[in-house]
Image 1 (cartoon, rainbow, N blue to C red):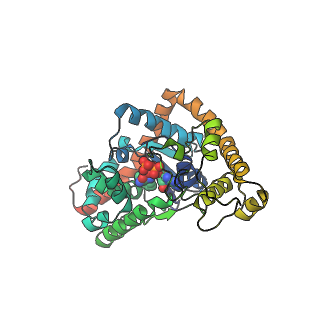
Image 2: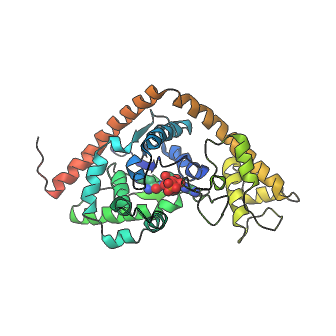
Image 3: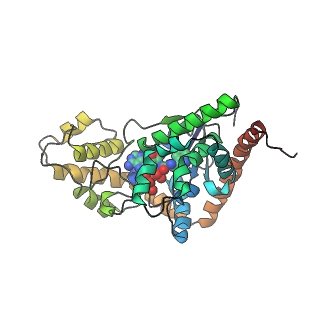
Amino acid sequence: MLQDQKVSFSGVQPSGNLTIGNYLGAIRNFSTFSEQYKCFYCVVDSHAITVRQVPADLRRRTYETLALYMACGLDPEKNTLYVQSQVSAHAELAWMLNCFTMFGELSRMTQFKDKSAKHADNINAGLFTYPVLMAADILLYQTDVVPVGIDQKQHVELCRDIATRFNALYPDTFTIPEPIMASSGKKIMSLADPTKKMSKSDENTNAVVYILDDKDTIIRKFKRAVTDSDTVVRYAEGKDGINNLMTIYSCYTGKEFDEIEREFDGRGYGDFKLAVGEACADALAPVQARFRELMADKAYLEEMMKKGAAEASYYARKTLSKVQRKLGFVQLK
Ligand code: ATP
Ligand code: LTN
């Protein structure tokens, strides 16, 4: 990367079918940095094994997530797109950073608390130290910005704390990264319970719109979305369901909330839900078409994976060797 070129880094777990939450909260914003920044976007399969995965599904979803990155507009010539487990520096730096992360800090992570409640039979050490691996992902590339949904803000803040602590002991090692969140779409809510985040691992598939859902399914899901007993489309406190649908509609159409309120003035929720479903399905159609083309060519995807891993390793190794030197590890020429 050029001397003063800024770096963007982010990752998505291949832990399920990607949702419009993943798209609007994260992936859509990745490409805003593609022109001016050096961008690394990773399929974080090592993170995904913190909860049990079926190996064949994990493998398939790893290809799918990479293909979706590209189908959503990330050009592999302009962005380094790769798979986390194919760049071993991530696991190596994570170990070192574990030694600079406090037990108390990790205990406060809300995602750990949520996931350990959800997977009470498998509260493994990886689930606990997950944010340290995430910090390693980010710090390996001397990252300036991390585009994420709001649920990941706490992890990026912990990454900043780890980097600041490390830099205080060993000056000028890491760039301190900043989380970047979309002004609209940073937290898309579940269609079944609009007080809860839409999540790809939700068991209720009606609560979630997947990027690969067909038009009829998308429209049916929006029709069934939980709203309230009011009939007026307006953004207001206590109207979580409608607020969420207005956010999604605004993300896909670029319309402001007051414009949406005027558009649906005097019309019921039924009309509005249909319009949201159509806007979403129409926006996803070209992504789905491109995704199908890419998935039909595994050899191309593997070629891109190889290219991405080689590029990422080149930069990651530089930081890793700097950290090893600073820590006092003996480095052979
Ligand atoms: P899981 O259910 O497996 O925890 P997830 O759906 O939360 O998965 P991740 O892979 O953890 O998805 O997240 C990838 C990116 O998508 C992150 O930047 C995250 O903040 C963002 N994201 C996930 N869900 C939403 C959502 N509902 N709204 C906005 N952004 C989201
Ligand atoms: N923890 C994130 C996924 C993730 C990530 C990252 C995001 C892993 N490493 C580095 C940004 C930067 C999640 O669960 N969504």
